Length: 243
Image 1 (cartoon, rainbow, N blue to C red):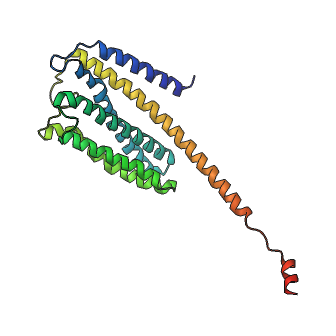
Image 2 (image 1 turned 120 degrees about the vertical axis):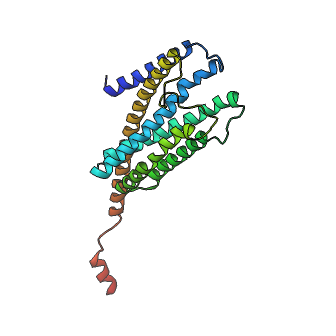
């Protein structure tokens, strides 16, 4: 069994255990069982942060080394980060409806998270729009480095501005205001989601290599066909026509 397959099995097993642990936690006094959305919503946005930080590091590494392997890792992590950001927004809307009475409100945290989602969606679109690999890698790397400024703004928006959204659950000033069973379940959910992130990124990198091989094979075939279309003129036939 390969290490990659072991990682994927571990991710699935951890997610199953995290689900069981979350269901076993007692219901919260105010929100009841709805509060258990915490165990999915928070890991989703946390792994989005992690994914975009990895994109930053890999992008900077490409700009320094010009090694396309770093570009593949940056792109894969960016795409997975977009997935987790979208998941966090969707789960937040499901949580907001019974809590706030609306699916969406123009709250600072919600708006800034949506902006981050569309910015990194633009990052993914940029990678699809440039066929030259090194040009794509260079421009995407610059994008990936600059876009990271959004993460601290999104995360601390609930502290810097008065919003409906609750303060950060773990990374926040002061002590953690959460019961130990909730903290344990949340930390294990973060661990399980991290394994899922690693498995998805590895699979996306493999897919990137396959896409490049297919592209190379297509270009090689196109070059061969174009070359076969060029023939050497028959000078003897030209001479006969002139006569």
